[in-house]
Length: 455
Image (cartoon, rainbow, N blue to C red; front, side, top):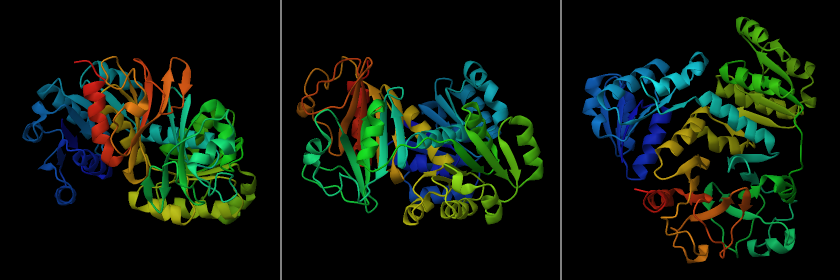
């Protein structure tokens, strides 16, 4: 598979790195020679210096042989032009574009149906609001993924020393939770390393445990991890930019009492004009007096969404110290993720990572419905459809040769969710959720494309 990426920024760099690791042929186009130098020195890919909207640059990159074009620069207009020119040069190349400006929202379908015929438009701001929404729905979760139309949850939580699961072997978990409760632990993040535990492994306090649960069983499962249920009624948003405004509008529709702090007086007026029940406060989110006056200790959730990640981090720490029950922090730099865990700020969102997760599902071969990348891209969770041509159907999972570091985590059969065992049989038409460590993804993708898809 050949993929042309327009844009060597954070999203372009990380997508190129991910795809090159999987031995895909990748070409990166960018005007900035320094950005291209970083790419070429770090990743085994071809680089082309020039505009992504230039037919010369696109031809040099081999657009006519490319299966996919990813336009992921920081400029919506550049991404649109790149797709338009690529559509002219190579109409059959699948096009994905990152478009952030809300002004373009009403025209997404127009861009798909007519020139530039963009197959998938990704708005990272919409995706990060969806991520925040998922984190809000699961108390204490570090990562939350939804599969099978929300019927299956893939959740990562830090194991509390008070949890009944602390320091017991996985093989003994069924005895601990009872025969009527099925719990599949897919992975454990321990000392920043992702591992797939075996039956004789023990869970330790401090581990981040990733598990699969049916939505109807989620509350009782979270209690096993000492994560009590919590209803979000009062939310404070710090930062009234595009992400903050989108989140406030979502919460307003759900009748959640919401306040938003924004330092720009002009932006405050715009927010007040567009939001009806949301309380708009003009000031600094890191102002301790302001936070105290607004009863931050009564806030169920504080979300810091300014464009300055240092401000977001400091404000989150301050909010937690002042008594906020839950804090979600937006950061931009991938290198900050380990720091956030070290200082105890575990609920973190990143617009670029949200965009990457959206892009992954569209570059995967096979009948892939969704894909989620986990901590530092160490693993991926893929939802796909099993077709009758597959070798993995009609026989027990224990007899299927999956690559090391991969497992089937859940199966959706019609409206029934199955948490599988070794004796479970996949049937044609089943939707399957597969957890795979990074090194196993390429092999899983091959299975999905060769075994699960008609030719």
